[in-house]
Image 1 (cartoon, one colour):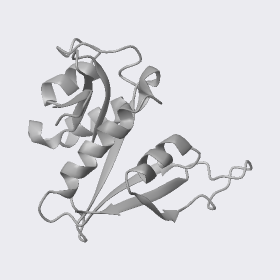
Image 2 (cartoon, rainbow, N blue to C red):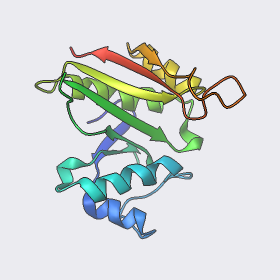
Image 3 (cartoon, rainbow, N blue to C red):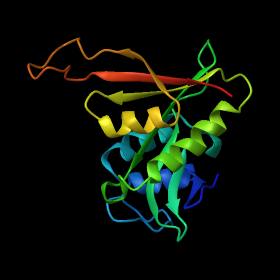
Image 4 (cartoon, rainbow, N blue to C red):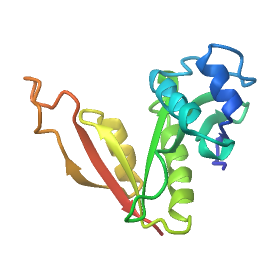
Length: 167
């Protein structure tokens, strides 16, 4: 998958294992990558993926440097919904790269057979990510920010749940 400035390269089990081990994955990594959430996603891929097709994508600049990652959290649920996840290295946030990557990912997922909606969960307070999704046609369908308040007016582990229909 490609955008004007990005190429989404499929992750492989080999590259995921290498990054988790702190070894050379054969990819040029940009400053700030991998970011903290990368390791959680790669760990899930290595533990649950049986083929390279089970992974997500590396978000790369035209020069090949990896600046982020994106993918699905499993495939369709009983209602045809697919949850996506994404993240960029801090130096590349706020420059439109996230919007480009999530747009092409969400469009691709929505076009797959059996998909009725693309969903995403965003931590309450991550306003930039919520605005990104809303720009791409996602709407807030649920918020669990009133549960388990941490005394600062939001839940300690609260999320906004957003979705958009498949096209």
